[in-house]
Length: 421
Image 1 (spheres, one colour):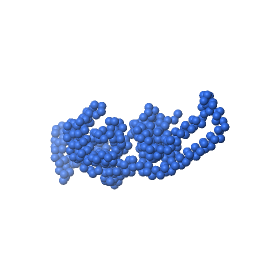
Image 2: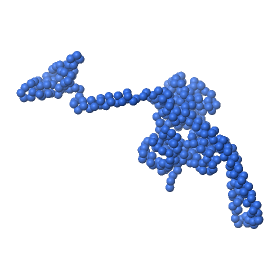
Image 3: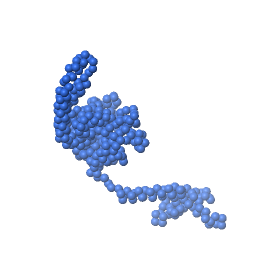
Image 4: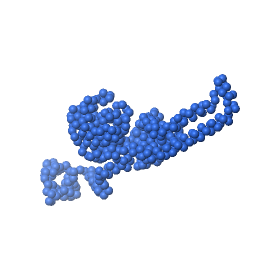
């Protein structure tokens, strides 16, 4: 667009014409442009040198909007230059250190996923190197080109299956979810990938048996944040609590044994006092008139006393197996029921709080809260609500109530899931 001044005259000495033209040449020293346009009076195409002040590429309104947008970009650029701090590799690792300690940080050579898997396999007594593990996974994928439902894995790869296997067999090629699923099936382990994008991006990979012998916790930096795998020691807190509370559990077990012995002595004294009426009661029991309530209490005490003499290590193994084999909702309910049995059970069950499900509740507080309130606060399609719907395996999941325990940095453990009438 160009602005053409009309000839000076008596009728309209200050009239301007807004025309469309095409720039033919330019002179940067004098800021003049040679423009080809159609003259509004003669209706002929002419070429004329015009100052840059009378030339624009858009209309006045669009020009104002363009200048406003450029000003906003300039302010953002200055703000970013003033407050933006470039994150280093140590800063990215600090993201996982704040929630869970990093057990192993493999080198960033393209084999970080296989190195992390070898670290966890070495913990359960399986020695593998990243090179041999890569070949073993590629060989398994070549022998099993389909998943359990019969769908070809080639659909999940970005190229042909033969080309994918040839590329994955090369040293330095990044592993993906297909290789993680293959490793889970080969060694019958469950792999949990904690993403740097947040809890809504966490992925859980289960073997074909649906029940893994153990759980591997990997931390993954997403695209644009390093694309790197690390090993997370999620269960270290629970192990430390179990070892630290072992002495307390032994003392509690000794106290419970002393209490049971005193209770047996008191029962023996009471039996001696009631010997005078025992023959009559035995005769009525033989006749089937009624059952002696002391017999029911004695049978119950015999059952509990045999369980009380079990070592704390055996009870801990039973609790851990029961909680691990349950789904997240049943695990919370089972955890509360075990804690309500006695003080000894409560001390032992508290060492396995790390097995309970976790959620990220921004600006939340510990206590009891309803799922309906969270739906109103975050929306039904938010990552938090989708995670709760997965954890609470019930048709009435939106009517459930949660008992939250703060871990830190916005993370909470669900200690109990219940429904109010």
